[in-house]
Image (cartoon, rainbow, N blue to C red; front, side, top):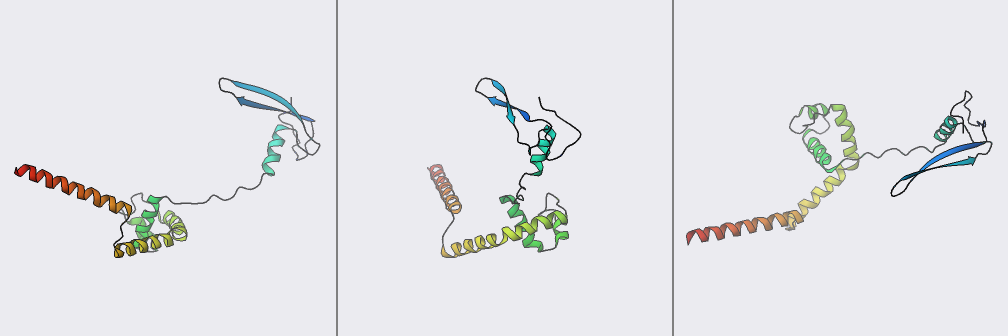
Length: 165
């Protein structure tokens, strides 16, 4: 059994020649524990704590987490930016457009992200919608809404004619 701890923790810890590794293998009905002994070379640490430290120190760095905004947040920051521009204090005080009561510092951080990643795309989408409206083209949602309104108007007309009879 390997030592779990000793006083001299160095990257080249070689107090023991073998390390016992316990693994759990999940099967469909029960769990099975297997113990294997793996020999280590002289440069690898053998103390369990040293093994963890060694692997932690030699692990590749994590890439930075990519920040994103969801659709609701994009609309939220678009409305705030349209009304207030770069005035984060007035954004923070606007209760109607800032229902979550974000602070000026929080708003500045997220607004920077919005302006870098999403603002140009939103402007392009708005321009495309305006061009489609001018050309008489409708979005799928608008066509569906018009179809539902036409069906409702037809039902009302049928109900009115049935009431007259």
